[in-house]
Image (spheres, rainbow over the protein chains, first blue to last red):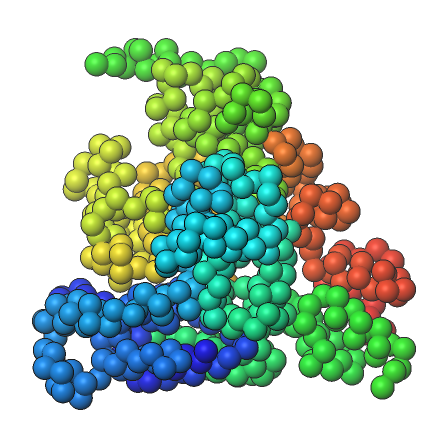
Amino acid sequence: MPIELKHVFYTYDEGLPSSREALSDINLLFKDHCFTALIGETGSGKSTLIQHLNGLLLPTSGIVQVNDYVIDMTLEYKKKHGLPTDVINTHAMKKKHKKKQKDIKTLRKRVGLVFQFPEYQIFEETVIKDVSYGPKNFGATNEEAIASAKRALALVGIDHSYYERSPFELSGGEKRRVAIAGIIALNPDVLVLDEPTVGLDAGGQAMLMGLLTEISRNGTSIILATHDMDVVLKYADRAIVLDQGKVISDSTPLDLFQNSEFLNKSSLEPPKVFRFALDLKKHGLDINLNNIKDCDSLADEIIRVKSGVK
Amino acid sequence: MRTKKKEIELLKKDSAIPSDSAIFLKNLCFGYERTKLNIVNANLDIKKGQYVSVIGHNGSGKSTLAKLIDGILVQNSGDIYIFGVKMTDDNALLLRKDIGLVFQNPDSQFIGATVRDDIAFGLENARVPSYEMDDIIHDCAKRVGMLNYLDTEPSNLSGGQKQRVALAGVIARRPKILIMDEAGAMLDPKGKRSIREFIKASRKDNPDLTVLNITHEIDEAYDADRVITLNDGKIILDGKPSYVFSQDSLLKSIQLDIPFAHKLAKDLKNKGYDLGPIDSDEELLKKLCQ
């Protein structure tokens, strides 16, 4: 299910003195079966962008198209449908627009959004109730909802002994997995996550990223906002860099991390393993950077070079 | 009304505790439930001016420890001494004046309607005269790089920016002990660096500042004078960073990351290419490029 953004602008507090443009002329196409990383400094617009992908925020102007579902907020569209075009009324207009597009709920089912600290959204009294809440909310029967909850929980590595426990008694990492299961239970075509590894220990991070790889192998597209360049290098097919609400780079992680001129200007730096590989290359070792994903693959590459295999 | 005399009585130092001790824990035990302890018999002596990193996997008791030291949680048994004063129900609020605590999630620590108000809140609580406030707010906002946002609403800030404001709010009260509970976790690499630089600068400003930094970042933990490692509520490693991070297999067994050079050397060794002991990136690079 492709998602396309065309000339998307978004302004917080439009028309007020505190107004601030968070997205500025975003043009992006997220294709199917792709693992995309969204990178950018804090405040660069990542979280705002993410909330456009399932209609949680409607653009101030521009078009968001998810598969055949179109959220059109261009001036032409507003004029055609007699919606107010001036700034002050945008808010009321948005409400009206939202009501009209009532299938926006279906959209939310197909594009699953996992917020920063998803564990804060847990509210039910047992794990199984919390995870099956989503499917039920979207019209599944109790049995169906519980079946998809069980599937989702199995996927995140939470076994049946947890089903009847209170989610609030779980550790931070477990809570997060339960919260993510709540979204996976909706069986979305696209899974969007806002910095899911923040605050997890190394074991928890590896577990979560393994889970996402598994999900993306099953055909779900993953869009991931992250600061973790190790994650970008190892898992992403595509790396998009945002700065002050604009896309300033869109390439493979490999091209991004080799573009030293660009990196110097921005606050980004390649992950340590990549920097070390670059150092080795500088010192004359014939490292093929295409093969570098993490520490393990760098070790393989070093051995390959050292043993003279071409 | 609490009289000055009573305050002095409440803050009487215990002569058995070393005079240079900032945080002293004696046989400290705590459990959220009756059946399980989250902190098991912790004994610690953190000295004045020391910079201590606390590492451990999720659920190992790091945050619990921080909350006990700040008196937010009350231990089941054992004692906590802040600058030699035993913490009790009566003096916890007084002792807490010296402690600044920054949490991981900035959303849960915002109170003011603007950045300025939020920093001012802590000062008002501490009854700082209003004519002094402006300067303090200005100075603290500048130190965390948020000077241009003083009149911004918190909801219009990003997570990392909010965290910097939380930091400003805490240092505005000039704490003697600064506890950071994964304060940098939500920040980008640049933001994380700025936290490290912030700690360095704060300690330079005030060499007596004691810092307890709970973190998952190895580079950050390496900055400290001392690294304490928790596992299931027990202190299992305590020493200089170079010592703690040389315990590769132990750290790995409790789900923690090890420094890059150790990791790569180990991977190479596992694949049959043994370079011998490696301590730093430079050493590894040199050996590999011979």
